[in-house]
Image 1 (cartoon, one colour):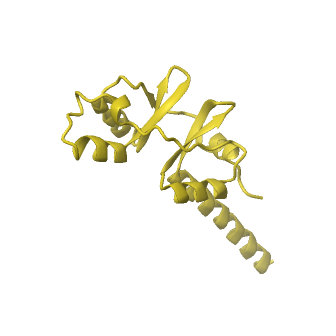
Image 2: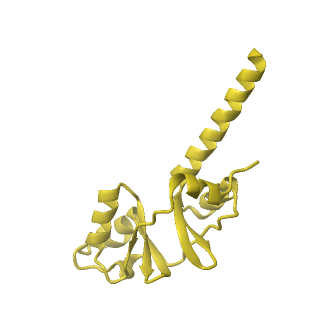
Image 3: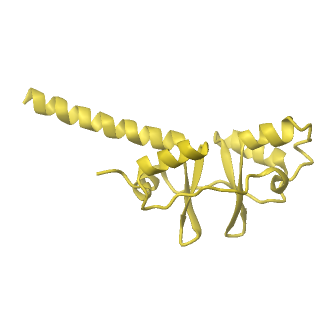
Length: 143
């Protein structure tokens, strides 16, 4: 049975790093670096407004000659956000990420952010599943 995103979040945790649209890009990049993540959700209270990633920083700040200490997150964040639902499978989300060329998916339930998953989280899950199947087959063959 395919693992669902809800199960993945239970294993990984539901912690979501967020930043406000009026914070500086410098603050966003520092938070990403300090927490070893590649993206932050941009929240206005409980409302998801966008996402800022290292890719957004490179393309919309560095390449455009903007100063990260003077540029607001809201001015460079991605707003066309692809999201996942907790009842979707890991495989479905991998397909969405590949199709849409995104590396992070906020997970929403009833329009509320309950987590975020990365392509790395999904790949790790698939590898664990394959390792389990291989171990079961090896055990079966040696019995």
